[in-house]
Amino acid sequence: MTAIRNRLVIVNRADPVICGHSVEGRNLAETALARGFDEVRIVTWPIERLEAAGLPLKPLDSVLPYSPGIIVERPAPVGDYKVPDGRYLAGITGRLVELFTDGVPTVALSLYLSPHTIAVADAVRAAWGTGLPVNVTTIAEAVGSDVTNVVRTAVEEGRLGAAAHILSSYLSQDHCVAVSEYTRDLIISEAQRVDDQHGTRFAEQCRDRIEVSYPAIDAAAYLDLDEQTIDDVVTARGLRRDGYLLFLSRLTDAKGVDDLIGGFERSEVGRATDLPLIIAGRGPQAGALRELAAASPLAHRIRFLDDVGDAEKPFLMAGCAAFVLPSKPRPEFVETFGIALAEKMLAGGGPVITTLTGGIGEAIGEHAIVVPVNDPDAVAEAIDQAVIRTTPAERADQAARAREYARQFDRHVVFDKLFARFPRHETVDA
Image (cartoon, rainbow, N blue to C red; front, top):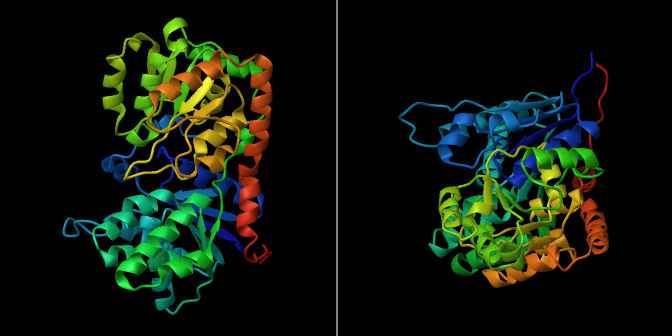
C-alpha cells in the first residue's frame, strides 16, 4: 500500500465560477498531479452558496471534469439559522483543520485573501491548538480585488480591524505571493496607508515578503489547435473564421463592454462591413449591456453568448478577427493581470485590443494594440487597424510573437517557480 506523502490543498472559488483564478486553481491542481503530488484537494463552496451570492457561473454541463486524483470538496455549512452569516466559511475552515491534522504533509494554497487565506490562517491556528501533529506549508496568493474590494474600503472608512485582519492573515502564511508586480505594489501602497493612519507596520513586512507569481494557464489547451476544429466550432455558432470581433470575459462595468459597443458603432468595420460583435460571458451587468446593445444602430450585429464552455473558448478565440477587452479601473475592481488576454495570445488568431489598466501590461508585453481607458473613439480606430489595415502576413507574425511571450504563463512553468521555494516530501511505500 502506498501512503500519501504529498498533498496539495487549494482553497478558492472553483468551478463553475467565471473567474480567471477559478481556472488557475484547476491548472495548479492538474499540474500538481504531474509534478508528483499524490493527493490534490480543492476545498470550495457549495453550488447553492455560489448561486445565492450572485456570482457569474458557467452552465454546469459546460464545466470540464477534473483528472482522477483531484478531489473537489464543498463542505456543508455549520450551524443553523441562529448563525446569520459565516456558516459556510465555518464548514470550509473546519474541513481544513481535519486535513491539517490527519498526519499527511500538506501544502495549502489559498487564492484570494478574503475569505480563503483567512480560513487557512484560522484553520492552522486551530490545528495547532488540537495538540495533534501538524505538517502544513501555507501559500497565499493575493489578487487586486483583495485590496480594492476589501482593504482599500477598510482604509477609506478608517476601519483598522478589517484591514488588519486581512493583512495579518496574509503575512501569517509561510509564503506570500501576488499575481503581478502591479498587485504587489498595490498591496504595499494600501498597507502603507494603514500604517500611516494607525501606526502599524504592515508595509515593511509586505515589501520584504511578497513575491510575484503570475497566474497559471493551461497553455496546451490553446496551442496547436486543429485548424478544421476551429472552423467547425466557429461555424457551429453561425460565424466564419476571421469574420467576427470577440469579447470573452465577465460582464461587469470594469471590463469596458460599453466602450467596446460604442467603438464598434463608430468604426469603419461597424459601418462598412458585415462583421458581427460577439460578447461572450455572464455577469451582473449582462442585462444593462443587452439593453445598451439593443439601442445601438448596429443592434442586429451584436450577439451575446452566455453558454461558452471551457472546451469551446480556445477555438472561438483562435477564430476571431480581433479580441477586444477595453478594461477600465473601477473602485470595486481593477484588472490585476488579464488572464483572458494571455489565453487569447496563446490561442493565436487576430490581434488583441486592450488598455494598460492595472497589471494588463504584464500580461500582454508589447503584443497588443493598446487604447486609453474610457475612449470609444480609440477603440474604433484600433478595431479598424486590427481588421482592415493589417495584412494576413502581419497578423500571423504578430500572433506568433504574442504566443511566444505568453508561454511564460504556462501552468507548468508557473507551478515550478512557485513550488521551488520549499522542499517537498517524497512518496514512499508503506
